[in-house]
Amino acid sequence: MKKNIAIIMGGYSSEYLISLKSGGVVYDSLPKISYNAYCIHIFKDKWVYVAEDLTERPVDKADFSINVAGSKINFDCVFNAIHGSPGEDGLMQAYFELLSIPHTSCSMYQAALTFNKRDCLSALKPYGILAANSYFLNVGDAIDSTAIEKAVGFPCFVKANKAGSSFGVTKVYSKADLPNAIETAFKEDDELIIESFLDGTEVSVGVIRYKGEVTVLPITEIVTENDFFDYEAKYLGKSKEITPARLSTAQETDVRKVAKKIYEVLKLDGFSRSEFIFKDNKPHFLEINTIPGLTKESILPQQASQAGISLPDLFDNAIRQALQKNP
Figure 1: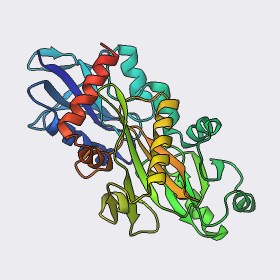
Figure 2 (figure 1 turned 90 degrees about the horizontal axis):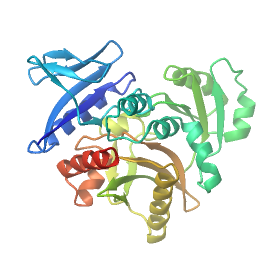
Figure 3 (figure 1 turned 120 degrees about the horizontal axis):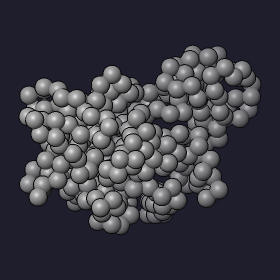
Figure 4 (figure 1 turned 60 degrees about the vertical axis):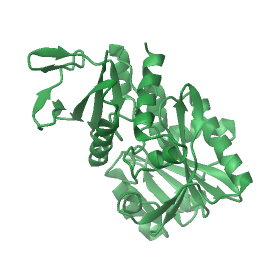
């Protein structure tokens, strides 16, 4: 019997358009012989099932069901394609776990931890994971530019602590540039992380649970035309994404080992994509995404393709892993 799959997409953050695109690719790619797929749009003002004719039907939040042509439809599994809140920060995970509905992402605590850059770095530090020097700032804190310079130096990156797709990120070259960068980041979040600039090769490493095994996918090297891997570079063609990355054997071995260690230390499930920069020939961890882009052009699907895993297989595996974890 076919399984009913809710593909959730949209969300509350600046990444909602990217999420809608990811969700659409999942819908188009899921094997129709195995699944009845439903596009569920999650926004602050509405949760709706959007049919192929674009008609909308409300979602019953009491049990996450929909009514179509007089028939109630419950879901066997949720495919989570929401980048940012509430799909990547633990809110939807907690909701589905309370309802005992299997979902393709990691669990609530792991989602909340990895979405919070500062907390994630703190959790990984005891395990010897190398990272940039950092300085934390919250809304209302005094801005001590001298202390920031002492902690991280210039140039540095000012980042929203809980945001993705490089929203709220600015590369700063001097004290004079700090106020505007901080103001930009605070538009995305009330917590900031300011990090030292790492000058070196940037790579992205996908790690998934494939057929029950933690699997490190081929590595992607990021070569951006812009000053850093910002929104334009990620989504508007201002970068080259080279898979497999041009790394030495030692570099590749090191970063694959670290990426797998992070996945296992944090007890993740589902998809993940970790970003690293090599400094002094050692991979330094930047951040991890647990709901990475899933379009054909996105990095993780490119890596899966290099590994011989098609989009239908990639998405089918995610659902099968979720159902096995929560039968």
